[in-house]
Image (cartoon, rainbow, N blue to C red; front, top):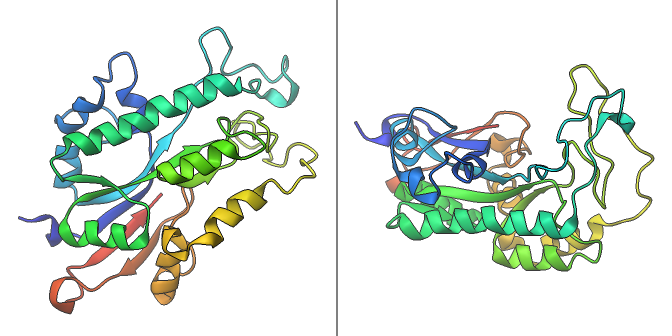
Length: 249
């Protein structure tokens, strides 16, 4: 039974890059081997109708730094900010791992930067990957790193995770605690990202999906760690139904 017998799944977030880089992760080559642990691998993903998703780069705290301080002993219960050089180095390692998967995939896996590239992958049953950074720890306030990362394929950025950085205060990872923390930066650091976004509409994959499928996507098809959205697309020959796509986060 082919994958198109089921709706195609486009997932809003996975941590496979972190797992592959771990002590027992096996590196990029392990992505092509069927396993029993971890978020996904290529064989299991294809069996389940996984069309693609947001592949997250998340930077763990260094070993010498406590990653989860107790709220009673740390301001707001947050880990300290990461060293920028360390954060950039770790981000490059995981980003390279994503491109190594693409290089070794024999055309079965592709990092996409535009809505058109994503659509072609879904049509051709090629797994599509959107590069996502979970926290802007590796990005400097001059946004030089952001410009380079954008050219390299970064299309989804969550400014902050559970620790402070140059752009935001961080959100304590505790149940039933308000995410409203910090006084705010008072700066318009998002302006650089907006300029990149607005410079070329064809590169705004999430926005293009919303513009091309406004009635079905309902304005939220590219949010990581958010909610489930659905839209229908025409399959080969304009057929509907077999071309269904379910976006999950």
